Image (tube, rainbow, N blue to C red; front, side):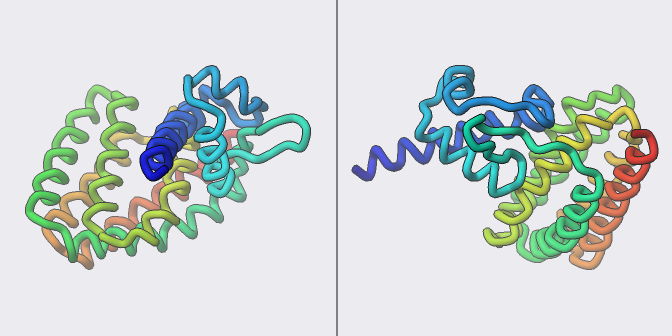
Length: 218
């Protein structure tokens, strides 16, 4: 029984990652409606673990249930997005400062490696590579922070931000974003809690400005 439960949980996590990425990449665009059965066939994962994944995505406000119609990917609402950023700013500062306090030398090495790779994407403007490295950065910070509660709350907010960035990235300054991300990583690697918190705030201020600029262009 335990093995079956573990296997189901693993499949649910896989389903969550796959569907979340489909939403972030806009493969499942905002407002699109789908059925559990259709999506199960599309991603090749059974309906039970998929249902668990969809419940988690609904809790994070990435999808919503439509009675007798299935599921719908939530729309991008700029007003709600700004409210979400207010919340994320507090959580990200907590994660950044705790990561700076608790990071190991291994975490520091990993952050330096990711930051160095991210800087190389600035000239090529390789958005896909930047997004992948952004995920790696978040994951290292989350592990280093050792605060599962903050991480669990922040995870869906990061997904919302990545989706917004995908939808409006042509309006963003990739080099500025890279500079802000790498400053955060170097501060955490240096175990400088104050600098890490300030770097996190500057990144969130940039994302708020990016969102407001996108609003002006809608």
